[in-house]
Length: 389
Ligand code: V47
Ligand code: SF4
Image 1 (tube, rainbow, N blue to C red):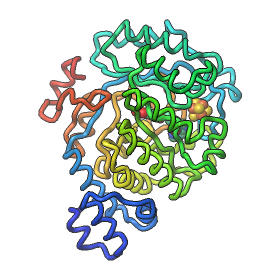
Image 2: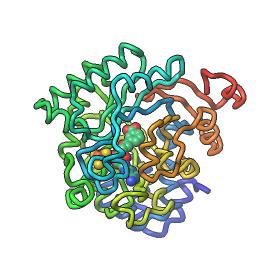
Image 3: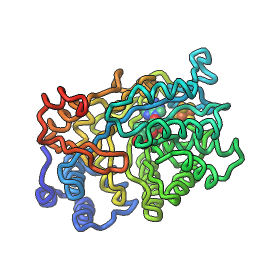
Image 4: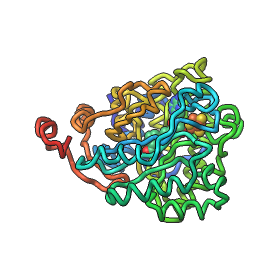
């Protein structure tokens, strides 16, 4: 049961926590030390009530989802992140695959006439797939379906393809934008602190490089998301450091839409010995993210990693977005030990999940333009109407 924030203030005995709560209620920014203290001393109910207060202040009961599908061009990757169950260059080389442009266009064509609004393109970093190959793909997708928003390529993929093509970040971003790229997903951020990043993702772009790519995209008027891979070998300071770097860039550019904490899953990777975080820690983190990331409009729970029921719980802990229908044919996330082995939900299922949490389901476009309010639409009507489901 989420308590009203006034009740929390009256009940909290810890003066430091009370001081932070008052700041939040008065719309003041909390500091890094405040954030750390929340991790160290904030109870689940205290953090949840405060985060829920902020979430409802910003969005009321609105809970967003979108209708999207994924394309994964390849699972081959030159990098060797220890948490990754997906990359197949060195380990399990025989299981590597890469799609041709035609195969990817077949996936796009599969959605002809269906009311999806976004394609999310993300995969491994293949040594031979160039920026020109991807520019050609983007142009073909746009020629086929101009209204489809293309959210594509993590900063890790982009940094590599620009470097190989000897393009500056600005040149590369402008080139892909010109070809049809609309926005960037948030992947590849992992944990920025070098002492952890070097241990888990030592050979790919560092924090400054990741942030520079997003800053360049924002300067071109593109939006992007940001993730944080948590619940492995990082500590609370590393989490706050990560969120603080993102918050600072957002102060400058205002180009981020959504912050997406990604729970580390330990299935079938080189970090399988590291235990996964508990749901209590997950919910505390979501709540602190809502409180700390005061200039990020949205906090998203990515349900395939968290599981449907846990994702539903996060809606009372600061989260106001639950990603989308997804339709992940190649199962990149189930390979990483995701909770969900079948990462697809119909609109009716997503709407039900949101309504069960007493929230208002709103279908959105990638940039949070509201497409349809589902709160008054009957489930039977959604299921019967292919344009709604
Ligand atoms: O960067 C890899 C993560 C990310 C594991 O922007 C893992 O809308 C947990 O960023 N356990 C890619 N996580 C996915 C991503 C994303 C997903 C959905 C929406 C958006 C968006 C972005 O997946 C990687 C990495 O942090 N990941 N392995 C694992 N074992
Ligand atoms: Fe490659 Fe991404 Fe896996 Fe790292 S997380 S090995 S960059 S696919």
